[in-house]
Image (cartoon, rainbow, N blue to C red; front, side, top):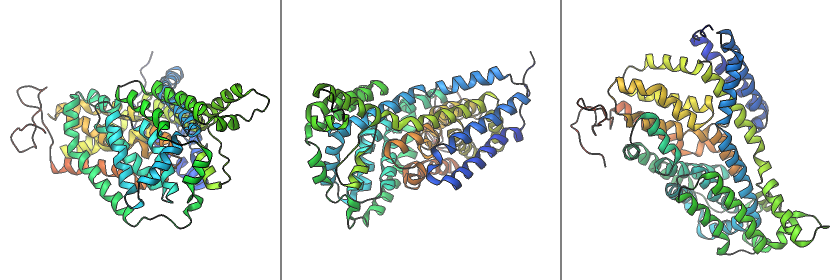
Length: 498
């Protein structure tokens, strides 16, 4: 059997250029609705172009097809998490958990401190539980509701939620990405976390300053967008109280104890259904809309509906109804469609060798340490766009660059930090990435709308690149033991890291 030919750089770039043109056209024609079909078609067509290049170079179709199956299989767990989050949002609104969080948030958070406070709250919780997705699907949903109640920007709020959630996720030893990055680079977990503080702490400080500046002029809007009386509306619809926060506490406890994400969120969703039956029986029966059923069966049907199709509000207040009518597994199906198409495109690009061909061209141009780290950052961002998944971005970039870092005598923590600074952090900024799609559908704000306000995610790669070019805290392997790492800049003696 003949070996497939090596792709040329032009061949490697062809599917990307084709995809970029299609995506730009989709945004031009459909605007914020591009992710509801147009982007999926674009990704599938671009995958077809990549497959044709592979076939031309001698790749067998069966191999390409198998890569599609493998690539999409990597998204199965995120897909089930998405479905569980949709169910959780539906039952937590029905149970009064989300309405209670919104009412308390409206009482506690003043508009002038709302954005930095939202960022800081999400950062602390994500640091404790190690999951940006869980924070966004619970606290994030409530904070978006609080923002609308205060007549503040949902887009800026989403940026604050994502900034805080990804800071905590990145710095938490409980986070999967924080464990994957050092594994891909060959560094040690806590050395990796310590090394990240040099780029991550300045980035979150800059983000908090920006959110504070943005929030200084914020005040409760006149008219409130129809939500001035939101606490009264919610109190009239739900039996509110602190006991309704128990499902939230249970989810956070399970997450802290490193219980897997999917069963944790599913347990939270089911517990929300139990609390809905116990404390909001009239809401549950009304949601069922099954007059022929007995009351117990109607309650079962109501919870079932919330799990499947979310909560449908009928408060008489149009703005409140729009805020509360959310959730359900069905609300995630379009996002799942996008993820499947994106993962398929990334899998074909990797299998046909097109992605690796582009990386080799980048390495030839990266002559200095600063340019090598900058190339790593750019590659991780590009892999997020091409492979459409932060895990693939981290693992693929780490695998491709690890030998070059070793050849140049650079400690593995430099690579693992760069993987997180760009691979983890920029994933929610790409609409078809699993993280970008998840955040958009969970928070109800389009990716391109919150992108300009995800300050931490935008700043972090630049801070990392600036420090790399400055030669600050670039650690090198000691000459006597390749596994040991000196804690120093290029030019200073070894010293311990904090």
